[in-house]
Image (tube, rainbow, N blue to C red; front, side, top):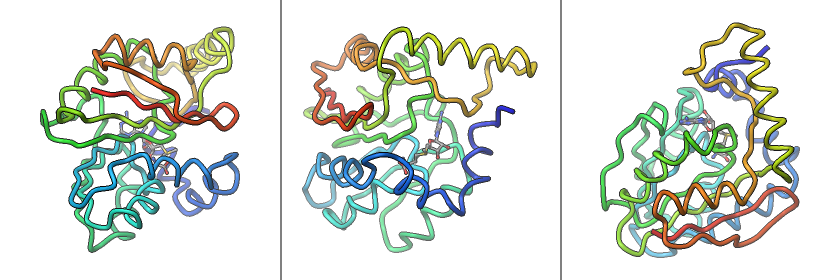
Length: 216
Ligand SMILES: C[S@@+](CC[C@H](N)C(=O)[O-])C[C@H]1O[C@@H](n2cnc3c(N)ncnc32)[C@H](O)[C@@H]1O
């Protein structure tokens, strides 16, 4: 049975971090790597899309303790956990979908998203990426660490299976359910460039997981 996105993560909160770090290949490497790609300067302001309990922030706060984070997530339990982990940090946590929450323009030094955006299509991502580009300051950038489809065929199969399950379970199209539908890296790059980012590069790869950097 498909589960609503926020409910899916909240229902697994007790084991969430252990699962991420032990069951996802190379997680012990890509979380610290992602954090190391963010600005290493005091008081920097970062926008985290799908922050969850903030595994990437565990590493980032060690590097930049004074960082100010705006984190957006659909799952209230994940945000509560993040708040409890870092009671003394500058966290502005927003409960909602990053597709709907308005972003302040020219505000963030960088943005990050880890293991969250592999549920959405190019059509859904392009308006989000346009909004994100405008939210970044001049010289700002977006670090996206996620897993990707290995081929166009695999991308199509994931999407077709989600649509089949939604139809079978009579689920409306405008509600987010948890089912992984990663794009290929090429299609992700296309969406970012179409949204106006000036360049997109793959910084590092671990199997199907890649860290991309998109410069405003
Ligand atoms: C696998 S977790 C990753 C959390 C964290 N970034 C990490 O790597 O530990 C994915 C998170 O993305 C959130 N998410 C998925 N779709 C979202 C959306 N449209 N808006 C906001 N958050 C979303 C989920 O609620 C979940 O907390």
